[in-house]
Image 1 (cartoon, rainbow over the protein chains, first blue to last red):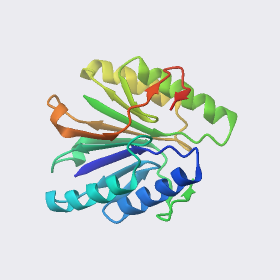
Image 2: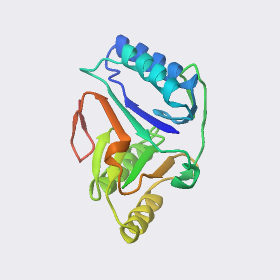
Image 3: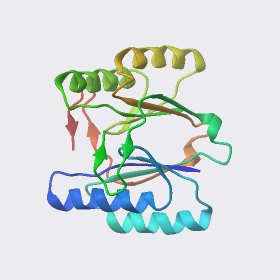
Length: 95
Length: 95
C-alpha cells in the first residue's frame, strides 16, 4: 500500500485542471480518503505507471507530491477520526 | 514517526479557525510537509498528548483526521516530487 498526498497550486486555471487530473489519475488506482490523500494498494510495476502518470501531470515548480510506502500490513498503521466524506471521483468534493 | 493528514471543513469562520489551530498544534510536534500533512517524530506518550489536542480542536462531524504510523525506519519509505514550499507555521501558506 502506498499513500499519495499532494499539494497542487490552484491559483490559476491550469493548476485547477492539474488538480482534477491528479485526482482522476489516483482514483483509477486507489481510494480517496481525504481531499488530497489517496491510499493505493498497488504492486511495484503498477506504482511505476501511476507515478509516471502523476509526474506527467504535476508541475514540479509549483506542485508537491509525496508518496509514502506503508508496506503490506498497513491496516494496523492507520487511525481515522471524524467524518468520512464521500468524494466524487470527478473532483468535486461532496462534503 | 507518524504522518498526520487532515481535511477541515472551512466553509465557515469556525472551520477556518479550527484549521489554524490544528496546524498550530501539529507544528509544535513536527514538520509541515504539505498544506495539511505533517510528519511528527514523536514517542508514544507524546503522540497521546498530540492526539488529544487535535481531537479537542477538530469537529468530528465535519472534519477528517488520519494518523499513519510509519515506524522508526521511515526515511526510506517517503518519496517527494516537486516543490517544497515554506510554510508559515501561523497558518498562512507561503506558496
